[in-house]
Amino acid sequence: MGFWISHVPWNRFSDFWTRVDHSLRPGGRVLFVDDAFRTEEELIEGEASTTIQRRLGDGTPHRAVKVPHSPERLERELAALGWNIQVHPTSGPSYRRTGGRSSD
Image (tube, rainbow, N blue to C red; front, side, top):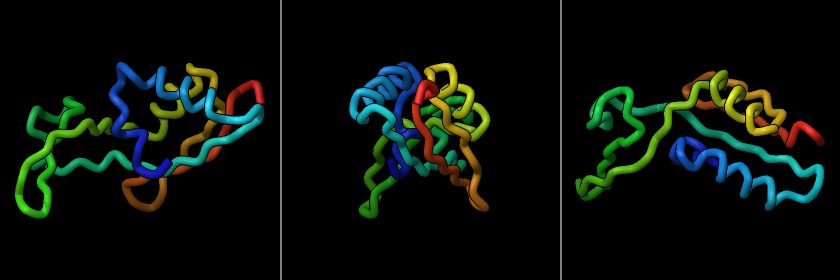
């Protein structure tokens, strides 16, 4: 998954990973890359909000979900859902990792 996890709302996070699990073969693995980058101008509802506003090239504003996961918290949340994934930050604002279910 490329830059997708941060756009899954917290209230759907568990269901999303259940769907991922059901999409994998037994022993299957996932690969993801994402970031927690949000600009000051995007934070229309404050730093704690997961709603941001971005503008298209023509200037029209659009709201989106952008959850600023830290690698540590994301790793803990996934472990609580039964995934064995160590999330590693990159040299920039991104993180990446592969992994599978804890039982694999």
